[in-house]
Image 1 (cartoon, one colour):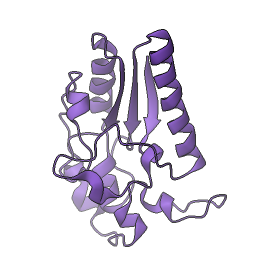
Image 2: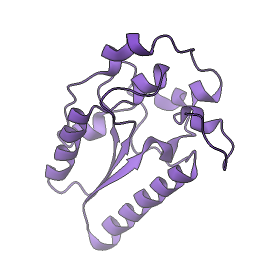
Image 3: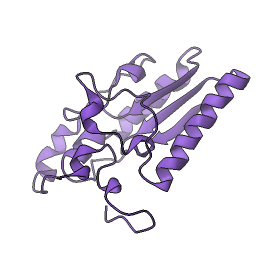
Image 4: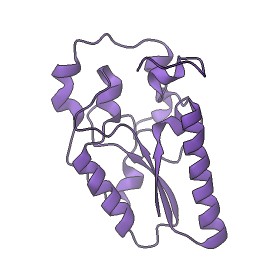
Length: 167
C-alpha cells in the first residue's frame, strides 16, 4: 500500500535539522496544520497495519506536485515533485519487494531541496527533474524570513490555526 502523506506532517521541523544529506524521510511528526495532523495520523495507521497485520506500507511525504512549482521562492524550488518524477516514485514504491513500513520524501532532485532522497532511492526511485529550471520565474519574490524560512512548513507555520492561510 502507498499512502499519500505530506511535508506538513513534519512542518514544524527546522530545516536546519536537515544536515549534510537532507532531512531524513522518517523524521518524527511535527505537524503544522490540522491537515498535517491528518497526514501524521495516516502514517501512524500505516505503521500499525504493518506491525499488526504484516501489510507493506510506504508513506510518501509529498512536497508539492504540480506541473511547475507554484509556491514562490526557495520553498517552491525545494519542495517540488514533478508529475513525471511523481509517477517514477509511485512506481518504485509499488514495485519494491517487501518494503515493510517506510516513509519517503516525495520531491524531485531539486538543487535547493533539503529533503533526503536516500530512502526513496533505496526503493528504486531515480528523479530526473529539478525545479531550478523555474528559478528565474520565481526569483522576483522576496526571500522569506523567520519561521517561513526556517521551518519545513514555511508560511503554514506562521498563520494561527483556524485562520485562512494566504499561501
